[in-house]
Image 1 (tube, helix red, strand yellow):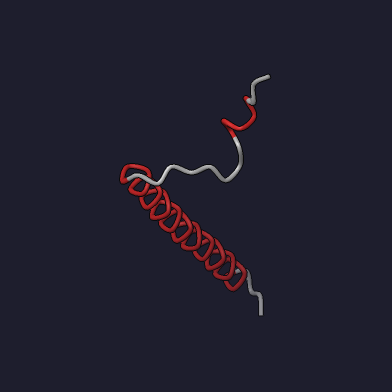
Image 2 (spheres, rainbow, N blue to C red; image 1 turned 120 degrees about the vertical axis):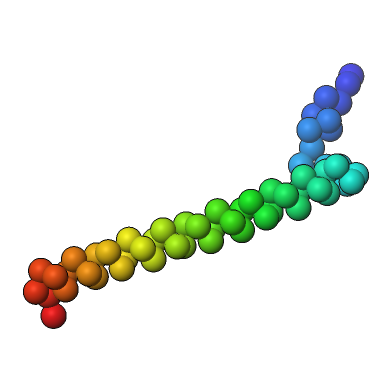
Length: 58
């Protein structure tokens, strides 16, 4: 009986220099995307406030 399930077990991680560099790169991409998303949301909010004020909102 073979144990094929162990090949894809949760928690198994490679920790070589390539994997570490890839992980670091992906984390930096995540941070950049989060920051850009926040800027976009801030811009949308400001546009709504401006439109509301121009429409005579208080």
